[in-house]
Image 1 (cartoon, helix red, strand yellow):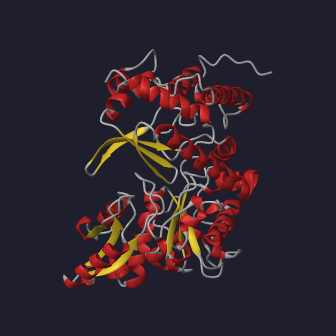
Image 2 (cartoon, one colour):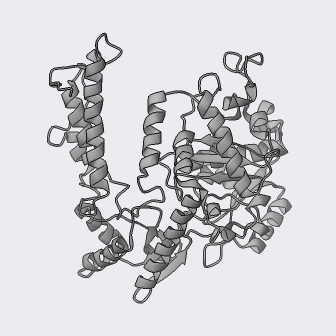
Image 3 (tube, rainbow, N blue to C red):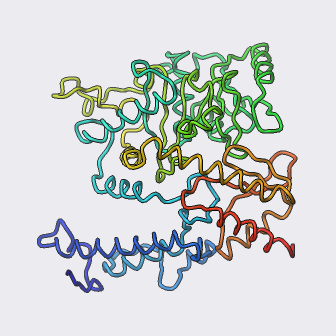
Length: 466
């Protein structure tokens, strides 16, 4: 057994320092013990989700936890204390009673994949430096495209840093498909182009339009029905109005599971963006028509529970991503390499440096199989139905996808108390003419019916005196 006092030892004595092997093992084992303790607490329903402090308290320092940076090195022992405190004052997003975001839960297999990825510390731009990971990406993209309903010979894709960037790539290639001259000559040679998205669509669409020089004024929001679904007749009306104004439509963004209501736009009448629900034979009908889309954003870090971040942009036309983005940097993408350069995928992206997000998904897919993901997703849907039945008797409730919206005028005050007490977390917001409402999200594999019952009791307890 390795026993070291780390209080007076600095990082410089770790590997690759000469004779640093034992000290490195000791330090990393201590780190692993901190992580294991945190994981155990995460899954303990009796533990707090959050030990809340205000930003100014963290900046001022808490019980020896100092965020300020020094010119001089600290000991390894202090670094271990810092690691412990960083987790202590953070949010346990894997806690069974954490309902705040779609990206929730803590998958142990995915966690192991993330640890291995960090250890490998490589870049996804060429097969040369990421031989296993680039081939894994190809395998995953092929599988995901097949699930959508696209043939291997025609489909393509790339993993990107989050759904917002995947959405940006989708708009980028849609514009390039119609106007390839944009790449060399810029927006000045284009007509006034416009794109269409549901009024319940993700805000990243407007961000992408701003970043790509299209402009947020040229994002036309299409009216939805009372369930939050885009109305096809309204889309057609908006397109015709734009054309009469001399604007040129180039892209329609449909949403498969909107952020607030969890609504599914009628994909057969539009075309779509979507994801994890395709893995459920029981619920995949909600995505009927997705195979007609030209591109799809799929975020495995949501319903599939892959640790953040993990997102892919999938395109039906092979080669479009490369044609749109490639610059053929000679120091990276030489044509005369010893291997098949089709696996040098880095030129399909705007990025140069690209994090390995595929291994944790690949490892989880190996562990669960497609059917394992299906069981997991179906259980979320059952929990959503259970919650709906429990609360519908005394609250105004909408059930959509795996999200539940509970309308109440005191949601912010109840949420504030939840954060202070740290017992449970869920989000709230207003929407249009509706008052603030709780948005209940089911995407945490640790959540059980007893946790749902606890949440209902907490809302009643915290709200009874307000």
